[in-house]
Image (cartoon, rainbow, N blue to C red):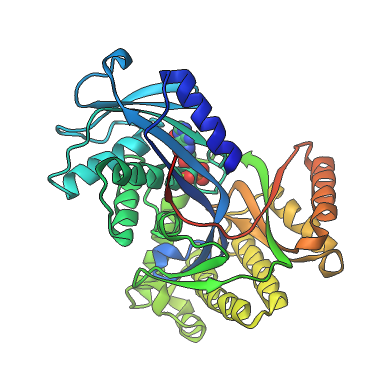
Length: 395
Ligand code: ADP
Ligand code: MG
């Protein structure tokens, strides 16, 4: 993150010819286990990663040529500037543009906080979270924006409200009906901790993961299969229909036994979707218990089981993700891999693996070589420990 920070400061000076007044950062995240459980009122188990978004900003001056009531933001990733509105009637656009993540947070903050007056500013946005890679570059950008508003206005938002404000921006301005996980962990992440998040009560419990002998390895498959776009809403509605047919508010309320007893009421597909969710919630709680006991083998086994269920019952994996998990499984305990699974919504993106820190280099080399042999794609691989949530950086 230090390098990212330096690059952002340099880019700011180059773009605007002076130093920034405010610098903020917000991390991306990886979900260790608990996939597609959030919108079923279940548990998720994410951690903030040592990658994120940095925003550097300063009050606009006349030479910047920024219209009144606007902010100019430059994204290094997009190599583009955009103007966002800081007042008036800000509505979501017909389609999603990259700066709508920023605009959505500003719009929501102004609406919620009524009396906030944000002065015109200029900013540079830099990120080392792969865009669209399933590590929530979008939440990192939203949470960094909310943190920038805190810095500019010298006001501190309640962390839960802050996360919900960012989620609302993702719903309304990015048109993605996501759960609360990404924004919660990017706001509230804690170094050397995972977050067991109860998506029914919105209650986060921080679980220490201090054993330095173990690390989290993230492998970006570099594929994102272009699907129809209806897969996510379809999965959501299957789950909700299954819950309704079983006579409960959400699949969180269903035990394995109840699901089996009610199987006849569901279509085969609804049954398999529900079986994933019910099993995944159980595995997520078990994974948190395993970490508390220092039982990394059990944690790893739950990760493999999660992958299998996402692949076969929930049907959101793809060939490349399956290959990555198979290679990890082949390296196995003897080679220092405890568990591995796809992470994020699916159909591409990343896998997350629990590994022995000491064997990191061999594991990375094997994964890289074998994945490339089987797919002709060079993966992006990095190791991370649980990182801190969003912060204002003194500069
Ligand atoms: P993910 O959150 O998994 O990375 P999303 O599709 O939810 O994928 O969000 C990615 C989108 O967020 C990008 O396509 C872009 O519109 C926006 N975004 C994220 N980071 C940046 C950035 N640094 N600069 C500009 N836009 C960004
Ligand atoms: Mg996202």
